[in-house]
Image (cartoon, rainbow, N blue to C red):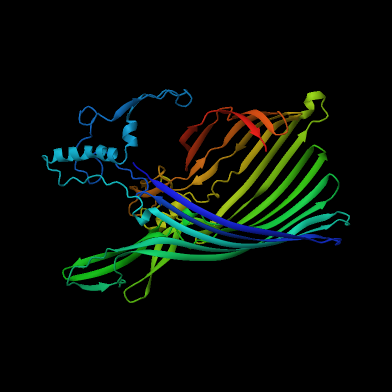
Length: 571
């Protein structure tokens, strides 16, 4: 399998800020405003296919007329190999046998060495046909730099203006200060892309056609540029109330936005037109017509936006100690998911025709809300060197949920069709033919905590911290945990009991915690030296796959402890 990629990006920006102070004003402190302009261009090239997996001599490869493998016992095929021994697999905790691998020279010799390796199939195919290799399809390397399917060319220009006024009501019984602001952002996107259309409705010449009509659209492959622009108004308000010298409260509200990645904006779309046809003699009946497609990206995507609110209580019970409680609520809009959107191209009469294209869309909303507790204290009352000891701890609980704008849910998994694809993409399907559904926002753990032992005294500074987070959803319908041979358990299905429906197991990152530590010595005002250690307990990271019977292990990763000696110098 070969893969090639190359990326080049440029970014230019200009920013200007100004501030005006209100002198002797009873509550206004200052007003700030600014402008930011940016211009970005990015071209990413991937080989096509991106990861060009191809068997060397497996007889089961579709379309290959060979009957046996290229055996290492055959002197024609036993060169370009080496025996590899795993000396420290899983930190020597697992014994595995030595394996025969392609040689390093073979792996580094692309493309000529790859072509030579794939000749093994050609030799076996010619052998199976009495020396005639004319019907043996040779290996086809991936294209690179010449196929628009592998090129993502994007440009983004943005203009932003912001203003913020700071204020303070210091004479109130409970003094209040804060700031009120707004940011306006205008974004202009251009995606240079490619669209292909392939009709596959074949009607015998001279037949009379009845039934459903279909649009006459000639096959084409053409360059297309897509423009997209949007603007966002993002307000913000931050308030602080001082209840006492030790207790204060904060309130915050803000609008935020997150633009799509350039990879999600790629403008490469393949369209097709198919039909269910019945031919009887010189008569053709078109029963149904399907106009659909697949998109590598969607250049019309908008940013994910949010409205976020938080309320915090801070208690400073000593000059070196504090305890805070915060509740937060983030409402998300236009979350990007893979679903169906409408794509239009003209027919020969100039009428726009609709195609149901599967790709990324702004198709969901959601929320992430919860509570955070934080505590920190140095025990400065202890005698001598022990007065530098401190403790820091925090805990976060997050409840998250995602809701589709156009819900797609079926209690049972299906075998084919766009609805089946969307159901597996969004809800997941088990191997028993049943849908999961009710999945949280990805990459968010419900529970997480950190606890750290601190030391700061004189030139010495040390930390020992344990960080832990509960399991979190990674993705649905990913390679390795999906397929098309789940059991059809729908009692109303004509294929009930057969292994013919799609399955896609949600993958999760299991709960994971690591212990890290560091110690530094401040040599002088500018230089410090120290030692850092990460994952001191040799924690193992597990990936899980979800089924109705529970979460099963999918993959295990061992990174081992890591130690670093560091010197820092400031100038």
